[in-house]
Image 1 (cartoon, rainbow, N blue to C red):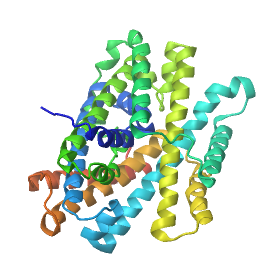
Image 2 (tube, rainbow, N blue to C red; image 1 turned 135 degrees about the vertical axis):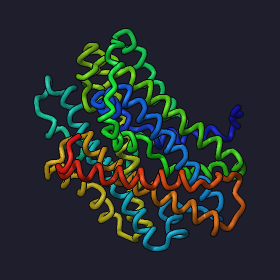
Image 3 (spheres, rainbow, N blue to C red; image 1 turned 135 degrees about the horizontal axis):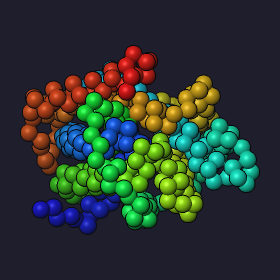
Length: 385
């Protein structure tokens, strides 16, 4: 039985807040496409994989003296090549997320304001990106709150959406099973579970109670897993094969205008918050780790998503699917190798240790490699999912 220490709540909230973001809005669509039962199995299996990955990383940080971020741990145990690969994975997933949020915010703003001001999703996406660039340039993190408060609000809104939608569920929508589509939701779900960057911060938050880190990681990873299952079941139960790629618009069309407005505002705030958190992190990475001046750091942070968007990337789900598969897969492989190395080269005794299993290690590495190539083959049209 888990006994949660008072000091663990902040660490748990940090992990939950890092995991549950705008990625949750992509899950119902891919689950509906694959068949609900198929998608449910994917959510559970990928959720378990990510619990293992977070525990592996937790052991790495506990075996290492001093405080570092993912890139720092990669450099310590994997050298310069590992550092560069981890940096690439982090930058790739952040840019992918920023592009995806830009795409979907255009849809959400268009749904709310089109009837009043006209316009189209493309225009509203550019307006959103311009607003975010302004806030990032002047370092105005208007949504910065305590982690526990933000997580509480987020979970409360998700709970209300589920309660309002519950009477509209058609259980027939929850019986489909398509084994041939088993890997279809992989990238999107993996993206939604990525919370590895929170683990080093959790260790710092628990500096006087590091023995609680293992429990905090397990609880902080299980709660998103449960929420994703419930959210996917509610949305797919209501909208079935008509589930939209951002979940909310289809839900609003099925239930009514009030849900459309409430859900769209939730989507806008969630993605805006996620955008700012990631953009500020990337800007600081350029400034602190690579000694790039503030203006250039801001320009690199905000101009790349704009260029990618203007070049024609318009699919929210495709974008987070690629970001999840490539970056999540690469991070996963690196973390597994770091875990192996830290057991031999770590310079402090950890508060917990995960028994090494070569079978689990190889299954994880092969899964991540397969996921990367599967998604890339799909992107280049060599396979169809």
